[in-house]
Image (cartoon, rainbow, N blue to C red; front, side, top):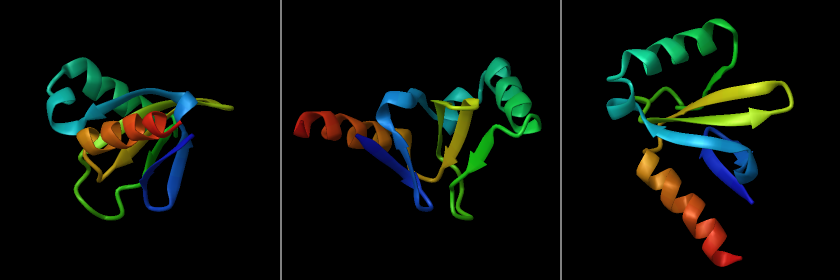
Length: 88
């Protein structure tokens, strides 16, 4: 199954490590540092389509861990993910 993150980007649900709310998770210094390191190493893809980012998804890929920043809320992404498995 695949999950749409925004801006024509879909990911395989098997590759999702976690989906996080941007407002609540970036309160932590460790999370901010992780995102900064991921961005510096070129592992961040912004799919927020010029809108305010609301969530980020950490995913496994062929080239290692990748972070996708999305304008779709974490709650909506989690509901979409849950509904995908519900349909099977």
